[in-house]
Length: 370
Figure 1 (cartoon, rainbow, N blue to C red):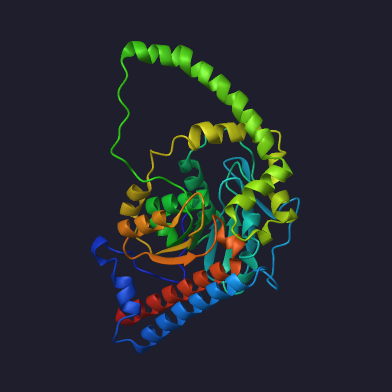
Figure 2 (cartoon, rainbow, N blue to C red; figure 1 turned 180 degrees about the vertical axis):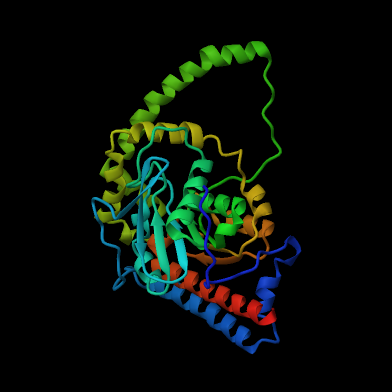
């Protein structure tokens, strides 16, 4: 990661000091600012109105532009000798969209065209997912952090807004906390990741360690391979993909053939099964090394949570806890499941663009005060 990021005339927001986090809302929406008060009222009413309208209409994406599904993908970039897929559209300040576990850049199909009307939009396939290479490596969130950071340095070439869903949210948060110079703002949609706990694993004695290393662990790994091999075969069947998607979408209208195809096509890669095994045994079962609270302690940029409150996997309590750790967080709650950006994209697009406008206002206020 040797390349530098060029300065930009886009949104410029000063990093928050730990004691200044509440300044963001107060500066924009102070009682002395009539325009701020008016904007806050319009924003809250607008969100309430769009949420209400979404409940009335079953087809939430009628008339919306959609990214065309391309079986061979869009653009490719070589990173550390690996092929990485991404989508690029629009002009303006950059936004980088990062998908969740098992998904791809295509999962942002209803967001990319709308956001690209005003911004430069990138959607990236993480290594091991989508149309990116199914590399046989030891997967860890640090790999994806480095991938996103280098993508921003080599392709985006200026600080950007990071937006992530589920695993993509966890990756975006980690990148923002570790490399603040690359990030102007962060948006999390039903993010993955764990909070730290006080429980520590007991230290085993030498004899138990030898038994575990040479007998228990090999047997355990063999059984894991068999079980996970069966689970992967089941997981890539179209009917199973559709069933899982419908279990996490409250309104299942958008669970269509294109979405299912965007998930099962990458799973046909010869290395996909091994990648799945490594993800499930190395990464999914060992996330305690990097916790959400430890990342939030290092975060210094504006944070927006767009949360599907009806998510059966990651409920609203997690969003509330994130806000406890990072009080300046703005939260937009939606009546949606785990993937609100695809289930109710018009609401997510509006919430995101309203927040971006508020950042631009904040930047102009800062410039006027200096």
